[in-house]
Length: 150
Image 1: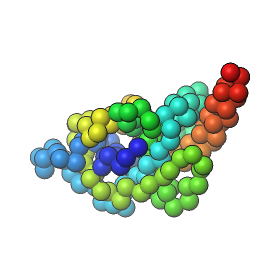
Image 2 (image 1 turned 30 degrees about the vertical axis):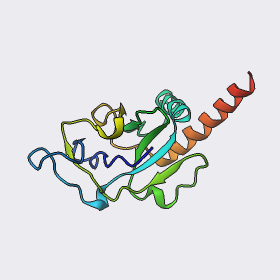
Image 3 (image 1 turned 90 degrees about the vertical axis):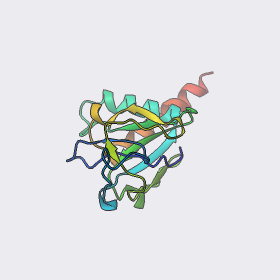
Image 4 (image 1 turned 45 degrees about the vertical axis):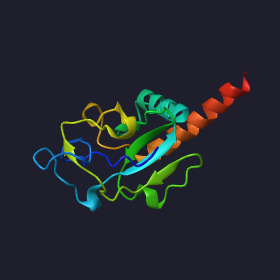
């Protein structure tokens, strides 16, 4: 997934992202220190991980906002800032957004046909990286087992 220049606000703001081209009247820039990181994974694994996290009632925090790309190649999970510093999950990537292109208001992302699978207003502020790591690992194992049954 390409960096779409969009993300959500910190948990305390309750804001919704808008495209980077939003006007000053409808958007406010976020300080880089508050910008979440973005974990991107193949769509199949990401969808499995979303299901795993949602089914696991005992996991704290649940799943946060999830972006999907228009080509259906990848999903992007918003995670707390600083996650990229220690992210080492094979088959995925974690990038720092550093607040580049971050805007907030009432408009959904439109860049490159990117949209929300799970919009910020419907879920928690970000996904806990340890919960995501465990779910991605389980998803990879489920996919491998399913593919080996063919």
